[in-house]
Image 1 (cartoon, helix red, strand yellow):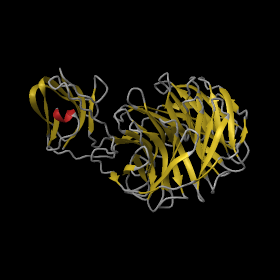
Image 2 (cartoon, rainbow, N blue to C red):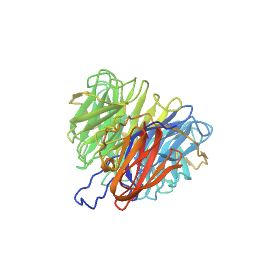
Image 3 (spheres, helix red, strand yellow):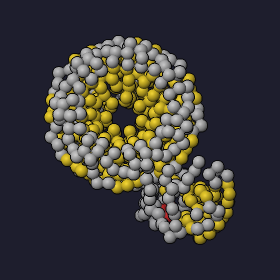
Image 4 (cartoon, one colour):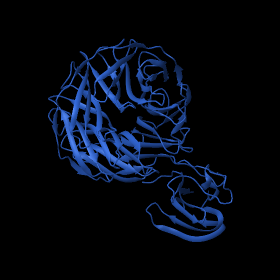
Length: 529
């Protein structure tokens, strides 16, 4: 079902939002696509990870209860405007979830999570490789007699994969950090555990510029409080180089880490030890050796947490998670932008009357941001996968589900320790299952209706080509041009030629307008009132 969303123009023949005007060769104006989409069915469907793909679109991974064999891995691909291109499920008779996805060097995708349907124990690490169309190439499980999970995966410089999560089957304590390295075919090269007597786990891993790995999560075995942020650095073979904890007397946890351009690390999560409310967003910056450079908290009187962070092209940081302190409903998507020193530049919430959260964010090639998570406020079923594309300032046009907020910002001084961990090199059981693969038909909704008036003009050069009025559109361009207008089903409803300025009458509805001339070739989706 379509509801009105105005999308900025797409340059069809170049694949990017840049107009070329021969009469003004010095002008290079860029447009940004923005949208909000939900994908799902009658039950729970959730997105945990998103990445922009080489074609400008997006790959999204999570889980689905609406489709598949029974609580399955959920993989969907969209184009640059968030239009669904394909969807796949992978699983068996029990629970199978994906928490991380990345496009691989061959154009396909690597997906990591856990499976209860296959493997050696109760839950095993689940690693899936697909081609560019989502067709399964291979699947692997790694585990022992109990529970083993993967939360993060990345292709490594040798073409293989690094996988991070937690294990109850191996290690020193209850749960230990679990780090696995495979070759390009998913064959295990080595496995490591890191921990102490209690709970230790990780949610994020990245290969570093020296070929080693940085891992972030939480620890109950070490540190100052109940749980502390846990940051580990290994060499290329998984041997520990250093470990750090950061925290206070309460509960502090990290969900995301990235190496920064100066060789250090940015870490995001939540803190109960510091800040304004119950939980606050916790943002930490360290140098290359894990020494703390600064720490910030962002929040209000209730729960606020960060689940994803990335350094942006201006040297600052984009942070995504959820907030109970601000927004329209109970939990809302929380998106924060800081400068390189962690100073807040802006904060946004996205949501409705119920629960909405973000688990993954990435800066896109146009300078905006792609955000993935789940929504109970919008969509077809219970929870739906939630995909948001904003401009560089965190806006989606004049979308009513977006609000600007001002969280309290503090600069705490967490306790830092350098613990001595117990390391093991286990030999997990590896299996090669054959999960059931389906190609479901999803319900796609757009919870961002925008009202477009005849007087309104939009940023980007396409506003000079098409204007929307009541019951009509007006097309203007240099010289002769051709206009094709499609309905939402792809049927051509108008195909006319014009010169200079052309007014075209249309019924109320959503249309795709294609304008082709010597100077431009663009497609725009518009709402006619």
